[in-house]
Length: 81
Image (cartoon, rainbow, N blue to C red; front, top):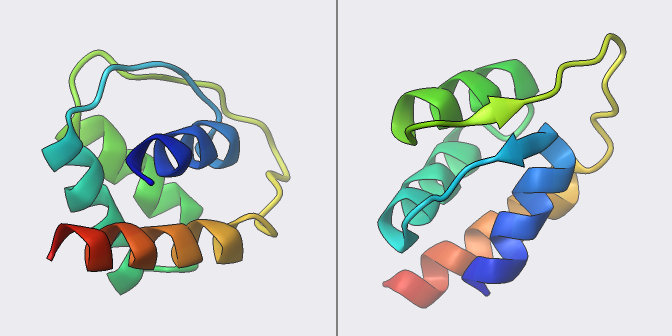
């Protein structure tokens, strides 16, 4: 589940390079659960939580994948508890 969540984050947030730990991914999942509709804050949180993150930013980014990401975040949290 964590790998699927990580891949979804990479697609949704447009992460080019990073190496998050399992603990960091779970921390990001909790953040998403608390802030499900804010891609900008999510990007900032990922950059604060993980070292050496490279993101691509585009104007008019697609927010439709956030619902899928929220569902995966909830599944990751349930699995970790």
